[in-house]
Length: 130
Image 1 (cartoon, rainbow, N blue to C red):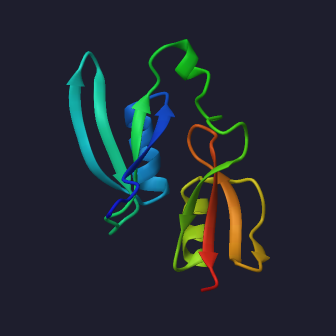
Image 2: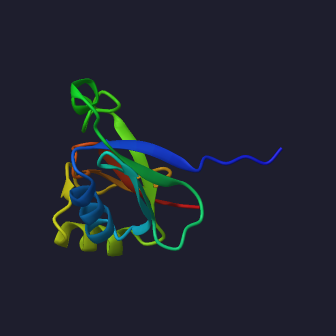
């Protein structure tokens, strides 16, 4: 059997604001932006050069979904962005206005810091020791 996780849906307030954040602040690639009608779009972003998992940016449809923007996991870290150069990416992201909620810390598994995306979801920026 050959399977992989291709997309994770991330509920956002506005497509274009989310695209701008992910492509400029996180340096992700915009892989697809297809109109679906009625103002809906199929928008996929991925870390640069990757063929694996991406984010499907899904604009909230109604009050129940809008209430989940920025809190899809009840305040826990939701996504993990692994890098080969923590210092480079931490400096670049900070300069781009990304809000880190803690200073970088060294753990047994590597260096990590929690940041928030445009919606307030928490992420780990992490460089593994291995």
